Length: 210
Image (tube, rainbow, N blue to C red):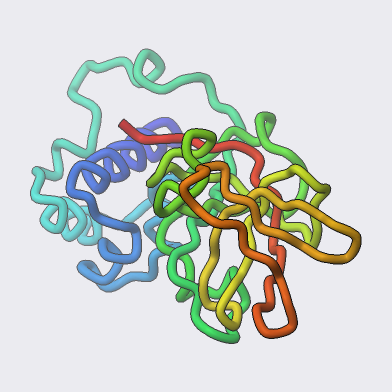
């Protein structure tokens, strides 16, 4: 049943988040890839019974905690189905790897499709307070992949040989790109031949998990 699979997926995600565990970490514990965990949580792939026991054990819960209680109305617990899309959360970027390489993906966040912009999307964690107060540290920032942005827009850029991703407001002075922090305690960064910067996407919105 689709509703039950969706409910089980929601429970797996809930307990995994409670344990501060990524999909990759949970996958390693039970011997599957993180995109398999992603499909379980989305309700698009139903784990076998042995896998469910392994997941429950890895999360430190009873397998009964993953299922609705007897006589419990599934329709009252799960919102009306809406098309959702898994958006990858990108972690540390290895030198030379495409940003969407599997080893760069830490987890997935599910978003309702109708609320999303078009194009290729991913999330980055905002580290540090250089974009404070506009973007708080440790928030998840939705990025739309694109090679350039207009002056004044916030972009995700790659530094240090494409190994470090950061968020900065872009300022153009002719052909010169300047990375502007919103926090005045930080200095701007000027892109040069010696200090090359590559725009990988535009920041669309941020969210913070409580």
